[in-house]
Length: 461
Image 1 (cartoon, rainbow, N blue to C red):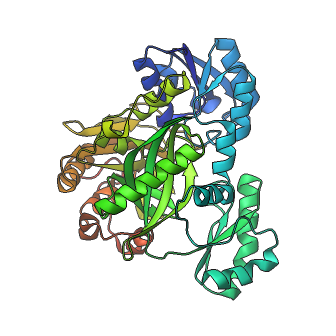
Image 2 (cartoon, rainbow, N blue to C red):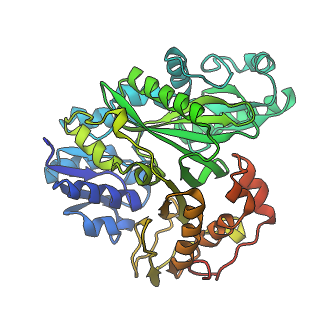
Image 3 (cartoon, one colour):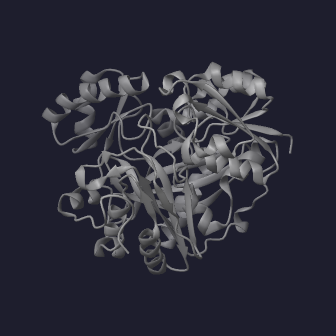
């Protein structure tokens, strides 16, 4: 491998994950950090660490010049962006390459095309991948939106062409709501992403969120099957599984084949995820967007395929060919991931940063905990509330649910409130056990739910 030293341009649990993968390959690592993150686990694990600015992300993790200077000062020859921050910023990828460094991810051109949801939709259509009925690209004049919505059929979803994370999205039930929500969505998108462009899609009210993991080397691509991420709150994923429980085998084959077609059409390099809506009433699936980075939920795919996605990204960036044929990738068993956040679910998910006074990590066969935590660590209030991901695997989904309950009961994060009680309640819910969920199910369930467990730490055994 041509690479020798990798700089990690991120923080938290994904930084820890990247450092470990790089060190497993015998590579040196550099961790950049803000003043608020001087004590984070990734700083302790990396071979070198460089402070790049104050707590605010704009002055540290989003400061391209500071990151590139840290790479030059330490002799790093590659940068891994993780997820979030600059991970899907084509300008950052261009700056990395212009500095003579390797960007561990897709090309800037791919990031730019697939990061624009309207352009990604057009690329999908060109590759013969089904898309949700909607406007033909960005709405250039909002005055034309009512006629487009009538042609699509209400309800319609108003979506930002740029960005992600549920920002700039609204659902209009009729023309009056459309008139009210269009400027709101545009303003939110402009504030979040610097681009207020919008497009319209048909709203599928009881859809499942299914996504396909792909790996490519710029020439060929393979899929690593699919994940289901239907349990969402405010369009943020809470619980993820692989494979999708309700997907018939013929639909799975067609879905995954479509993802490979699109990945190869855009000469995809590295790990990426194609997201779809699946209507199990009709058996239809529709492409909605591509994430040109490693996903938070990538561990469930690793658990059911045995393939280290982060290590594969690094090898591909180092110039190695993909080295995998589709026939090499075998789906085994079932995996579930739950996001452990520093939030109090019983109080409308109020953030709860603080100091970890004690930590008990669950163990045993088929249990994995990807985290940035250690006893004595103070979780700063400036960033995303994700503390880690608890992942379990078993031969069957029923077995994985039982193992998840046991692992949640073992997990103790003392000193701050977490979403462990929420996940224990979900793991015991009959609808979740039966797979009777969709993207709006969780928000209907939450008002009537009861979260067990102490006010601090994990759920009660």
